[in-house]
Image (cartoon, rainbow, N blue to C red):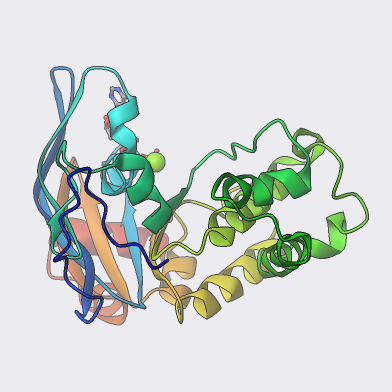
Length: 269
Ligand SMILES: Nc1ncnc2c1ncn2[C@@H]1O[C@H](COP(=O)(O)OP(=O)(O)OP(=O)(O)O)[C@@H](O)[C@H]1O
Ligand SMILES: [Mg+2]
């Protein structure tokens, strides 16, 4: 991705990706109508690292994650305040071209959402939209990303089949392949492995660990073992607050806050 100008007004002097912090939020608040679902969340995500977002159901993990590439914009009556800083630019601003920004900050959702197209077209759709016509290149992207998402062996002989005919777990891996095909700078994943069997989960985890050489990853997970296995940093969410943030090994051995200790010990060990 060479084009880092995300603004409609073509501001050219954005920071180069030399900083340790790839993405951060400052006092991020989310309101669904009257409901204040996220309170002053200030977190920083280090480049080429995996950060896990953990916490009980309803604590605001998806709300926070969705805000990071403005997916909450699509939900009616939702208001997001505070800053989301990416390459020196506050992307929580009307100045930002949201579609362009999402080429840099990609997302895999909690529920798989493949397009009603073939497996092949799901992966190549966005690339074609961006003018990529080289069949050999597209074939290569399809094979590489499906391998990375641990789906290639199961679908290599049926790439023309509808993605909707895949199982839920296969659809989720296809969505991971689709997201990586765009080579985003930052990859947001909301429980990408919750519908997968242990072997596929393992492969996807290995993929994410490999991908952090290229991408900065933020992942929501309910699985503490998974967070411990793959993440470098962990943020603990509780009742709409990002309550604690630390290196993963510290979060799992000596959390500072009682709520984090209770959550982690209840789900781990
Ligand atoms: N579109 C919405 N409209 C209104 N309230 C919402 C909406 N989405 C989430 N909420 C509320 O915001 C709070 C946080 O929800 P969120 O989905 O972010 O939690 P979560 O931590 O991702 O939970 P889970 O682990 O179950 O996925 C919950 O109280 C939820 O009911
Ligand atoms: Mg969620």
